[in-house]
Amino acid sequence: MKQCWRWFGPDDPISLSDLHQIGVQGIVSALHHIPAGQPWDVTAISKRQRLLKLGGYDWDVVESLPISEAIKTQRPEAFNHIAAYKESLRALANCGINVVCYNFMPILDWTRTNLRAPQPHGGTAMLFDLVDFAVFDLYILQRIGANNGYPKLVQTKAKNRFAKMTDAAKMTLKNNITAGLPGANDVWSVQDVRALLTTYQGITSKQLRANLIDFLSEVAPLAQNLGIRLCCHPDDPPFSLLGLPRVMSTSDDYSAVLDAVDLPANGATLCTGSLGVAQEFDGPRFVERHADRIHFAHLRNTKRLPSLDTNSPNFYEAPHLEGDTNMVGTIRALMAEQRRRKASGRDDWQIPMRPDHGQELLGDLGRHGMPGYPLIGRMRGLAELRGIMAAS
Image 1: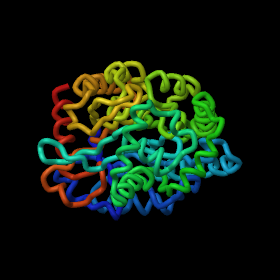
Image 2 (image 1 turned 135 degrees about the vertical axis):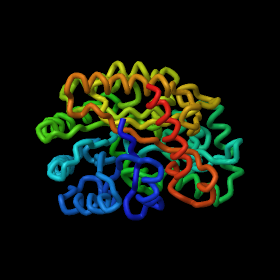
Image 3 (image 1 turned 180 degrees about the vertical axis):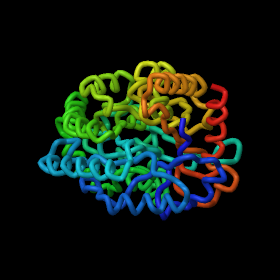
């Protein structure tokens, strides 16, 4: 697999020259300054490419070309936003970039409640705690009907926890959830979230999946003609938040969407950490089932923690080889798929991967870098993943 690294552009605290010392082979990046629903043009894409080229890299994967909330809910603006998405795909193809990752999570992108939870070894890790999320939902967002989404014991603990929180702790929790983690499509206020929730009234999981399939029916044929491989990232976490539907949380979800728009360009981003929060996730089996449609891999690990709701577990970002996902078996399955593709003559035989997220370790601590994207924690992860690939 091609060993890539997510780089957030000129404001990323990690320099491209540092990445050569790590052995990074390719870059995953995006134009985060362009809002969802607006087109990317050749000028903006080429500017990022020139910057990467000066640093000695190509732009291997776009993550993400965001899908607007209007597309997800099929509001009137969706028509223009899909046209802009197609324009972006044409511009990317003109610039020679052919792997595009996206997600279809409603309102909130990937979500954690604690961005720097202390770990026994002295470092920190991101964590999702259901009671903390219920505090946000019930008492900060004050979502109508939120009580119906939590067991009574979770509601009681959330009430008690909120009563003891300082104003600063409440603000931190609010910002952790609404302000947008690195790579998220949008940054929302509490008022924004409340307003957006009204646009999802009556949208079930079935309807949201239909909206995704409608979107792919529009853009995947174009991507196919352009030689672009689209790859959908799974829901993170893979269960409902704020009462909203989820449609890319399981292997069966992927089968439904990939089969509905049965083109090679319509593919999957395998994120072992996101999918691995679910107890039933089997990494090697996912690869075997969707092998020829996996266009990109996020290799990270999560560890489930005891929770008051088994359907919504607590979890934290574990070291890459120490969580609940069978990372060794998953990588071996991906390497076997690469060999199969190469033997069959596929141009896209090499799957781009990146170490995803990481604990803050050693010099990462106190740098106040991007949550989830520390230098040393990801270096450790890449070294461990590289070792498995070399032995596979």
